[in-house]
Image (cartoon, rainbow, N blue to C red; front, side):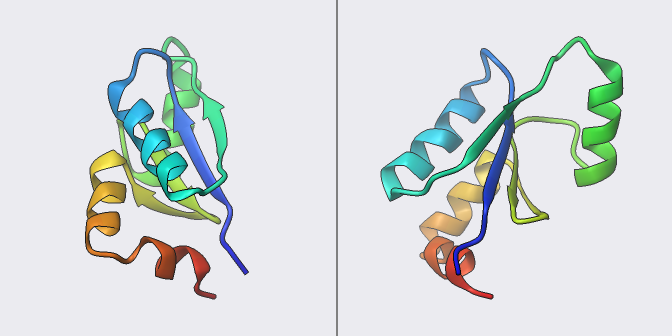
Length: 87
């Protein structure tokens, strides 16, 4: 069973766009949740959940895999499909 992909993004974020483009090219569906950059409470919750202070934040099910560069590295190693399809 494939894992659910969730991407937290904000407008005008080139790395958010790249992450979505990579997943689109690979044919994966994802849920995009846009974050208000002017809401410190949202940012605090995001940092608490992921340990990250930047976007995008990409989750496979409930596990944060990181941002765009992390997603790209997983893809370049040929591990993206294996990671998303594994139990």
